[in-house]
Length: 268
Image 1: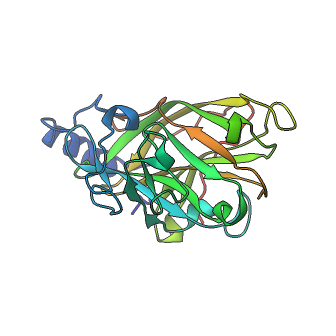
Image 2: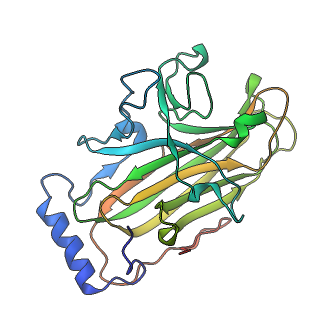
C-alpha cells in the first residue's frame, strides 16, 4: 500500500525509509538504477507465465507483464486502474524472430524488450498491455522516474492509422483508494491519414516518489479508436525510462509541471 503521507511525509516516515536504505546498502543502495531493456530476461517456457514477473539486475522479481481492459483516460473506468492478467512467453512472435510476453501464442497484446504494443483491429483492441514495476526494496524507498517515452503509430507495411493515444504512469494497487497518477498525456498522430514513421517523444521527470515495499508503478498506453481492416497498432517505447533509487526527501514532494502534458497526483 502507499504511504498515507505521500505528498507531505513526516519525519518518522523519512527516518524509516532512510534506515531501510542504509540497512540494505549492500543490495539496493542510493543510485541503483532499473531500466527494463537493460535488465531484460527472456521467459524460459513458451506458452506459460514462468519468469513473469521478470528479475532485475539483483534477481528480484520486479517487471510484471500483464494485459488489462477498460476505457480511456478521464473515463469512469480507465484501463490503468484495473487489475491485470499475466502474459505468457512467446519466443517467436508471428515468425518475426522477435520474442515477447503475450496473451497466448501470437495473440495480442505483446510486450517486447523495449516496447508495449496496443493493437487497434477488432477484438484485439479490447486487450491493453501494462508493465507493472514492483518495488523490491525492503522497507520502501524513494524513486526518481526520469527519461523519455516514445509513441509510434505503425501497422502492416509500417503504416499507422490516425488515432489519439493515452499514456499513463501510475502507482497501481488493487485497492482503488490507493491509486496515484504520476504522469498522463494524450498525444495526437503528427500527420493525419495513413502515414509512415509518425512518432511523439514524451519527457518524463518525476522526482522523489515515495513507495512502500511491494508498491507497483504501472506504465501503459491505450489508443482511442478501434479500427477494422488491415493491421494497425500503436507502440510505446520505454527503453529510455529509468527508475533510480534516491535519498528520501526531507519535506514536501513536488511534481514539476510538464509542457504539453498533464502531470498530477490523484487519490481516488
